[in-house]
Image (cartoon, rainbow, N blue to C red):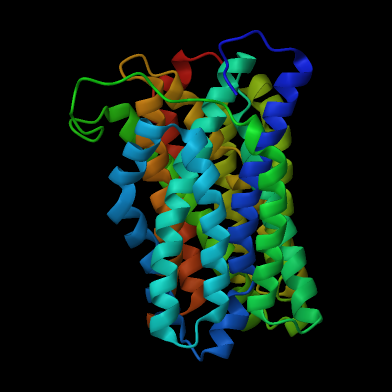
Length: 391
């Protein structure tokens, strides 16, 4: 759908809903994998260190195709790329359910990272295009849809485990749901093919310092988010010693608060400003993780994970919004740079957790990641851009 013509409020809302559901589809596929990590870990007899290695293959897949993903979106437009990769992503998810050993799972996870990166860049570019239609920042609500998908994926995972449905059939059901959403919403995506660019410089050549710092803030937040996605179930299983049918509770509590935070985030940003919101978020991340480290009881950790979910809720959407207001770099280029650095944290955080847990203990991993929140508080307090932009 072209944005060159005048659109009614009903048409705008339908486009926004369609893009939100594409965010939801991507989040549902990823969260379905995350919700079954404890099951897959047990079924294949994978150690914490081996799991860390497997999870590292996803960011490797991202790094190998980061430039390719950007070029595909630039050449064909996010609309056309997204319509294809959003179908491939859950197909690879189904292949995860078919993996019989460490090596097969590793190969599948590599391609899961490759296609996930293409989904991430294309769907966020769609979000930017819809913001242009509305003339205001609504990126937080799109990420809220992704978070709701995470919560939904956790609930479906809990249901599947209690019904003793194996991972492959679980993932096939998810694929069917995504295909249905794709058929209903694909025609409402926004045409976003950019004008031809004469310069052939990489977007990472002589990067803007402010964008790099914004990317690092996003990296720290998404590393924590990724750690909660992939390790919260294992934490409740191995550290909290929760009953097997309740190991998903920590993950679900984290997701529901992250989704809630993203839908109310715009209100608090308008009232207190982007800088203060991110600083408070960093404190919540630190406090929640440290609480779970020192008091690994079921109720306490459930509350702690809710605090972490609220803490990571608004950071990435806010960072994207600030990056788009950078006066020295084209908004699209700025978003590509910051989102790439940020999402790398989402994929690299979980393997780091695994390696530290293998060498010491899973609680040491969470204690280290708690420090990320304090680093964010310090960095945001020293960045002038947060004081110079309008909230």
